[in-house]
Structures are given as C-alpha cells and as structure tokens.
View 1 (cartoon, rainbow, N blue to C red):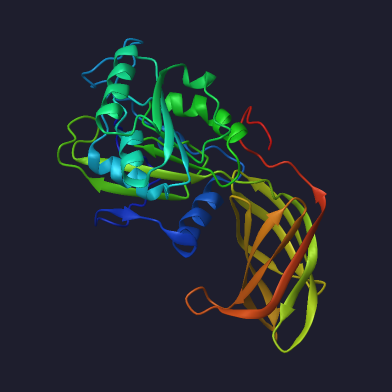
View 2 (view 1 turned 180 degrees about the horizontal axis):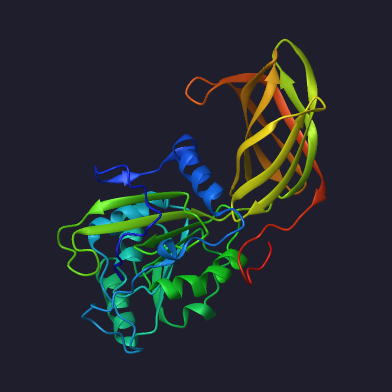
Length: 338
C-alpha cells in the first residue's frame, strides 16, 4: 500500500533518506507536532492517507497486496531495532519476506498472518527453503484475532483505514517498549517516534520511487503528579513536582522546582522511561534541565543533565520521583489501558 507523502512530514529537508533519530533528534519534531495537535486531531490534510487503489495484485479477501521492496524491508528491521531475542509479528505478511529476512539475519522467532491462504502457503514454503521454518510460521488468520501480547516488534504494510482499526489493539495488547514499524502509512494523531523517506526506484504505485517508514515505541502510562528531589551541583538536593497529562507518548503540564514555578519544555514516555525537559531558575536565569528516569510502577529513579542539549552536563546524584496521583493516559478512542 503506497500513499502520497503524509502531510506532517518535515518539508524542510530535500535530501533522502531523511529521518528523525535518537532522543535529541526527535524531540524538536515531536515537540512541535505535539504543540500543533495538543487536544486535537491532526487537520484533515494531515489525516489524509490515500489508499493504494492502483495495486495490481488482489488478495482473496479483495484487499490489495503489494510486496514490500527489499530495501524497505531492511530499513523496517533496522528502524525497529530488531535483535535475536525479539519475537516479531507481521500483520498482513503476504509472501513472508519481512519475517523470513529477520529470521535469516538475526536468528529471531516470529509469525506472519494473512487472510490469503495461497500467500500463506507460499510464505511457509519460502521459510522452509530459506532454512528458517523452525523459527517462523505463517497463518491464514484475521489480524484482529491474533494475540500480540508476546510481540516485541510488529510490522505492518496495510491500508490507512486498517492501521487506524488496528491502533487500539496495538496499544492495548503490546507492552510498553514494544516497537511498531509501518510502511507508508501512519497512525494519524499518534505521532511517530522516528520516520524516514527512502528512494526506491522500483516502486511504481502510490508515490513512485519513494517509500515512507515509521516507528512507534509503545508508551507506558506516566500521567499524574510526581514528587521527589533532584540533585544540584555543589549543593543539597531540592524538591521538584511535576503535574503531567499524557496524550499517547507526549506529556504536557507544569513543574515546580524548590517551590518555584518552572516551565515544562517537553516530555515523553519512551516505553517505560520518562523523559522530562524543563526550564528552572538558576542564579536568576532560566536554565534547561533534562531528566531521564525509568519508571517502575509509581516510582522513577534516574539522572539529571543541565544545559543546552548539545552541551548538557550530567549532575552527580540521582533523581528520585514518586507518583502521588495517577491519571489515565489518552491512548485514542477505545484503546485499553496497560
């Protein structure tokens, strides 16, 4: 399935491939997108994801089937940080090339599901020929009846409306930290954690010559009131309090440091890791602070860096936070809570 380029992709870069990578790289993009969409759905232009009605191979259930180019398969696995210990589930697996490639390269285990029995038969035959049939298997099965709770990585190349139908299931069943990688289509107001545009000359449908790959890291739920202490270089720890709302992985809210108001600049849940960037007054001037604290239930212990992102320095000591009030994260309509 191959769309016109999604409207929310950065318009500034003409070099390809383009990507947002790492915490520092994705924060500006996610922060701007979060500000633009806070409390709202994306505008209609951004929600539009034209379906690939020009696909020429038709599954037995009448949905289009277009094989994923190998270059895109390779990038999906790279972006999904696939490793030997992962369990991969490919929804709409077609001829099985994503799961088979992952098993050959990384030795992982995985499954693929598809409604087309002939494609499933071909995929199992190709897995046997590739020598990975002991680690991967393909099933003729409804993706909405497929258990995702054991998946570390889910890959998808489906129509945009199917992506949106699957979104609540992904958020309800996948554990925090699991990765979802899609080809061409996104999840509307659930903003991607990473994205890339690839030159793929052999791609003839949708946007000829281009492919879009997106990554999401399933967020834990960190919304609520967090209190604790942060270290201060050369002095005693000071009290800090965060009052956080969460929309998918993005936080909004307020912060006080040493009893004085600060400003929350950006916050997100990266799996179960809380990342909070805020400005607090030091010597009469606002100074950028950055906390990264793995969350375990209602406790979070981590580290603090101070200064601009390119030159921030670690402050000795630990950040210790506890949640005194818990709020549910907004994970979209009908998404289950973890």
